[in-house]
Picture 1 (cartoon, rainbow, N blue to C red):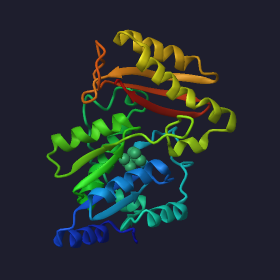
Picture 2 (tube, protein in one colour; picture 1 turned 45 degrees about the vertical axis):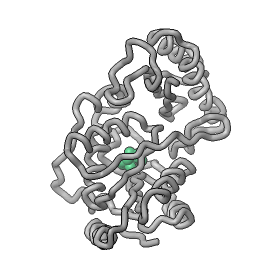
Picture 3 (cartoon, helix red, strand yellow; picture 1 turned 180 degrees about the horizontal axis):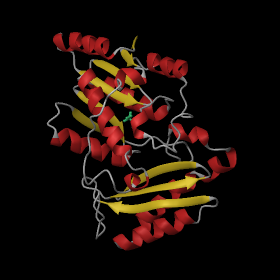
Length: 276
Ligand code: PAF
């Protein structure tokens, strides 16, 4: 596995693969890799001749009071996981290589970026869309793989790709859960044991509401009730939305997404389930 820090070198490497007609799958990450990331890499391995992973803790998607400085960066363990999963190239640029002094261009996916998680994290999706577009321009993948846990992020990226005619196929991959239902996330490491024990109640509450509500309002009300009842938790939002536009649903139908963000202690967790 090649570890590449220089964007120009990464671009040259993938250019060589493209020249040989080798299909390239790309898994962009911020590191602290877990089984959810491994499932994205395996999905890429199944479809693409070459697989590249990026590890870049992107400063532009963190708010001033968020966890940029304490975000976990276990690079050696991450590289081991990538090697074990058969990754061909691991792109690990320095912040100054991605954002040279004077960088002032951003991508904003209007309408999708300031609702739900975006309402509480102003600028977050602007940072995500900007870095993902930059990574796509450097890596030029055929396919890019994103987890459905960050469902709004997936919708924002799909829209950006469509609106800007980017030649990449976006593949959404199912959420990977711990045995007790907690969605895998790099931020789960922040949870102290008593909060970790409460965290699976998020998925349990969403699943119960998705099964039990008879109307759109009923589903959302039940989700809010269940999530607000988790001890030491603060509900940020629960919403039943159209899977492509994130518009609030007026009636229940299969395929809608029930999304939520909940803060347990200082850790903000997100999760979602599909209405089946
Ligand atoms: O989901 C993530 O890990 C990040 O938001 C991403 C897509 C790598 C952009 O920094």
